[in-house]
Length: 226
Image 1 (cartoon, rainbow, N blue to C red):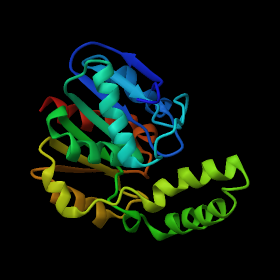
Image 2: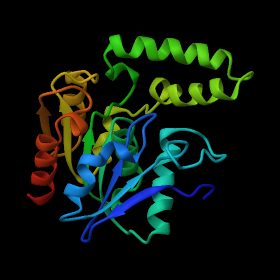
Image 3: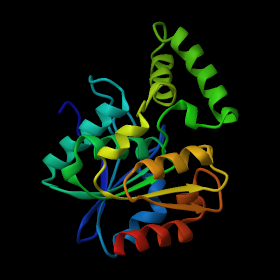
């Protein structure tokens, strides 16, 4: 693999890997790492080109990030793990569970989406406008190129068909905020298309893990330990 992930590791027991959202880093899960490490071996990663993990030379796509995760697990001799992904991290986890079903124990998808149509237009329109502007100047500026790549993840990815979710074999929790930037009907669609998935809404916006950690952590731990 062309990169080495930066990650935080804490705890003992079954491995659980935490995957942050677009433009963020593993510090997003500061309210989860300590709590989950009481019962699990926690790995919180910076994905490619985020935080302290280098960009590398491979494509900057959700599918590449999923393949990167497979490489990380190989490197650290993790045969199988629980996955918790938030936003784009949820999209990485979702694609990973489709591509590598034997490597996922339980799956938690927080604020994931199948495509850009799953995002409320009030959120998506500025993203698409910013992407078009950054793409226009990408050949003239490194910062514009990097911004175009980052915004492109939210415009072009993850591009998953609802029927592909039937390939997920892991027991799954789909969790989102009641006022999430992901449309409620879209979150329900994801849960309906994953065999026997559980669906939970927590009062709050897209960032329930950081904004309402007590309720979020309780829902996740109850699911993992059920």
